[in-house]
Length: 437
Ligand SMILES: [Zn+2]
Image (cartoon, rainbow, N blue to C red; front, top):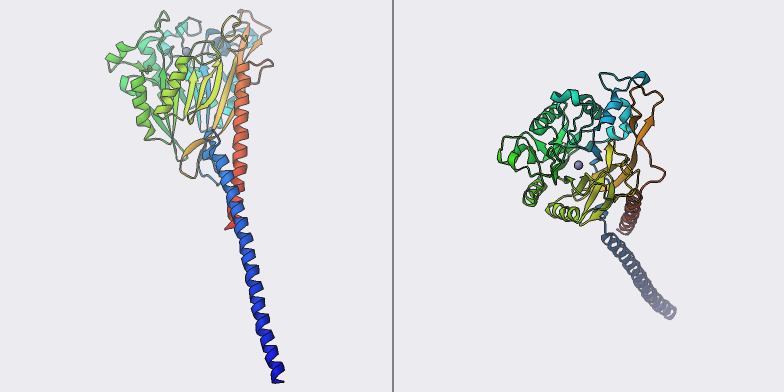
């Protein structure tokens, strides 16, 4: 019996020892598998993160986690009140002119898009000078003038900020600059790039929206005088108290942008540049873009060529080389010119930039949307005063849109795909981390 009990104890001890060894082995094996799995997961996270870091677009800053601040900025091209455009506002029944113009119909089609934004920008390529009212509705070259009613309609359409740094701001002389500032201030419309004194004209402005500080600064390459010669604005610059238009000088531009950069979350440079009707940016535009970006620009909004030029992403910033016309009477066949597309002057674009503050507190462009616009001419049945055309802006892509337009659409499309891919990758990473904690 004692013997039997002894054997049983030995067996139990042996069995339990053996059991423990098997258990230990099993645990070790399990740990090995877990370690392997963890390693694989880790490797996967590394691969995905590397993919994100390798995206050549700024969207690498975008993470899926919720962001509190998001704002929408819309931007479009040149507002040029040519005679025919202004006369359209005065068209009454049977083609007779009314004394008081009405531009509501002209901008009605695009109003929802402009007003549903936090900031709406355009290039205001004209002064406002009420003293030359009798010539207000005529088309006099290099003597642009915008009717008060048109400014009020632009405000009512949703525009909030205009760039005044362009070659036509001097069309009504220094008095025209001063009265433009007065009327925009009176209507509570923000403006940049020209003002009553040198100091105020070169000063950028900062707009605060939903906790995001947006800095705006505007430059023009040249200013027309009466004969449309490109003159330096030195005379006005020397007289510090005279109205001034902010001409581009590299040194001043760098200084202004560098200082503004320290005060804002996002920096926009409005620039009047390039050659008219050229579909590709010039060497000079590219050179200036580099200067702006190096100094701290996040987004460059270009205008003056009156045709669309590409949208590109370079060195961490977006460059809109030209947004074409917003409203004008330009409709000539540019076949023999560089744009080589007769609709090019009528084709425009409204960009919509979605800005977000990401997890690092950085404000970036998350998404770019666009709407094609077209300056549409309506032939009138009754035209006793020989006015054949009425103007309005429609949200429409022309049937034979230009290659420039197609290129922009393609670029925005590819950016969106990249953002979508990135968000998908980010969500995978977050899922992995949560599963492996
Ligand atoms: Zn211009």
